Image (cartoon, rainbow, N blue to C red; front, side, top):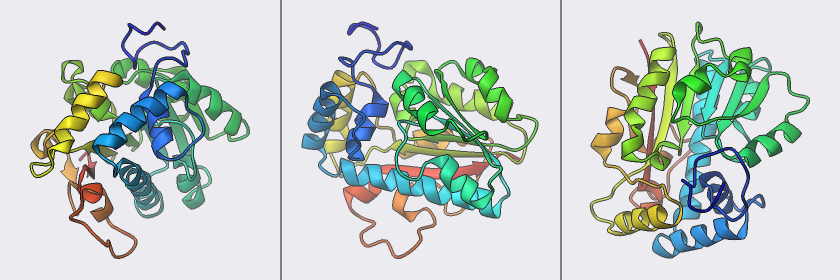
Length: 271
């Protein structure tokens, strides 16, 4: 990959090109990132200092959603798209705590994710890590390692947690969601979180400019645009809401802050 290519394309490794997975790793105070990723993260934090807290909210809702679906809805298949680098309490750890036989496939375009994932999951027969591009849904759905664990004739949870805002409008994020929705059987669930445009926070627009210029991706979308992802499906209560407000484990101290509201998320069921 050369620096003049799309920062999210290709499968080769180049530590001089930032990736969404590694920038997110910076926000989570991880160690699997490079100077260029830290540069993008720092530029973003200068616009919106709350981004590290927002990243934690995104991780925490993932835990709550996976726990709910595995423990209460009986879902035992999870396709985690744009999964990012392994960190504390990954999807398979949460799902397999409720059901040790739960199957999880992580998909990310950054080959470093696969390299780290294979090392961590070498002895977990119910979990795979696949290098794949969700902008080509069919290639992911038909991938042999995906098919080895995910049976699309049974209900599955398709996870798009913090990834669709790294899909440009011209790359058709709604079409991507529709392709995976069409591949899933009734009774499947879709879990989506996304950067959200805040009318009272001009920094949300400035952040988009910084991300697009430095990372090549990072669309901050309106509530209406995000609702369109769930077309044809039934949103679970409480609907599409700021991340800390999706079935919180306790009292949410400040649901009006930018940190609480900048990302929204929801879970929908395909009937």
